[in-house]
Length: 203
Image (cartoon, rainbow, N blue to C red; front, side, top):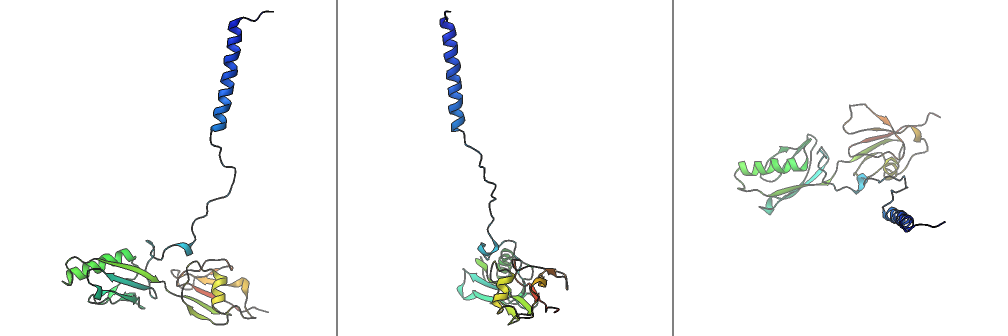
């Protein structure tokens, strides 16, 4: 049986097309097969100057006035949420972000006639302390450490006492309603101003 030239050409063309399709498929990027998720940076790796951080008593701020270095200084927010920068008097900063404080102080220096074009920055030097009460060796307030969790807070306070009920530890969050607490475990993050309570075992 004779095979015509046109049939041979048709078969060769089909084979060539299949080979080209396989080559293109091999070059296409493959979807990753891993199911791992990308982890977000922990609170401990973030800069202290966070846009959504709101100032409260116990926070420490640095005011740098580029227009007049003598007006620069560090100030702790007092119990009623105020600071007293040089030549600006006592100003309320409770609940404000650092950017909002910058704008407020610039307006104050300008309107008071101290600086025509005030240039300044406000940075968060340290956050308000956390508190730990109950069955730990040294209950009290401690400087806040970014990214800290319950077990690390307990370690800072000298560790549990022998009477500590480790499974019934609670936290009252800084912005929580008075008396509102949540039961936590040792991996639970602690925020600035939070109050940790370690109760005594029943038996």
